[in-house]
Image (tube, rainbow, N blue to C red):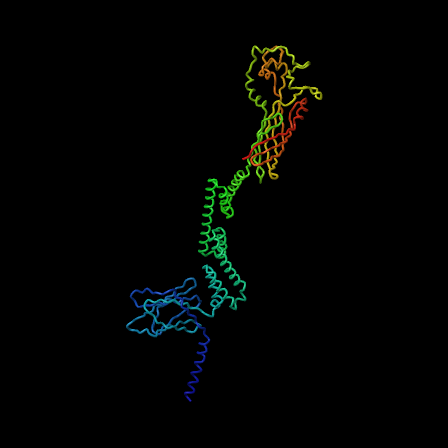
Length: 506
């Protein structure tokens, strides 16, 4: 009877203790030793164990053989590290069957056998497997994030895929899917950047690396790859510019243009300078292939001498310049300075003249003049002196046909005798002129003055090019300015002119 009662009491006391133990949580202990752990202890027979935890609880340790354990605790950034030194050999003790018990409040004691040898070192991570932060969702999310930052995008993606199988995924679907999409983008961008570099498309590779840096700015490898691509891009641009310049200097314009066009298409910093070189090459090739430069000899009534230089491109507007003159204009310019100091000779003494018109005080060489009934005055038959210059534009119309248009200046004039008193003063003789024909040409000019008129002259015409030969027809109209009223009809009659030209191009 006593035995039955004793058994009942024992059961009554042990049952609550057992129930309390069963209600406690299990502690998770995982070995996380990196490589081969070595404890540098010299000649001492020792081994070292370290227990690391980031949980809020504290650890305590007991050994079935070691009565007093020397436990050192370090805490850094929320991580606690417990270090214990164990003796592995001793004459007094036999360490066979050594067990270490780890105790945490609210958890079942965790026992681990220790068969330690000299200089061994082991690390263990202690955690609460029931903690939310230790659930598979957070574990694999954390691993995925760490691998993403390390540039291991495929491994990170695999962990995010595992997360999708966790119950928490439904509540965090948007976040997980965003991480997966970033992994896919990073894998694609990295693959594309590598391919671009293989084909020397360094700027495009650099732009993909820049995208990757936006998503993973702390990764040093991405920055290094981006800098390498940028350096190769700049070196490639410098090489293309150098090759373009060498071929340009050597006269190989088409090959030089190819190099400069690659500089522009690649988006190099020297693209603007390369564009200027391309324009210059196009001009030179046009001149070489189109024979755009042209020179004409031109003729027009009363002005037999004329030259025109024109540039005629097929694909753009260009320009021309012309000048015209007659021999009398050149003589007038050349003899004016000579006549200023000339004097009559004794053999050219003037006497009363027969060429003086009744009722006037003017002298005339009648062969160059005529009487105008409309104006009731003597007018010249034509412009004795004439010169013109013009400039304008040329434009290709169709096949060998070009048009040109522009404006310019025309000047023209003729000799008119000075008044009677002015003639006497100029000739330095007081006798009246008797015979105009007996005077020398120099003295005749002394008795005459040039009546000069200026004009604005717009013009338009056609140029025909065939092989290296060219023809030119130009019509111009002179708007004369500042003439005397008695010469109005005369200048109007000399307003319109047509010039003909022939030349060659190169």
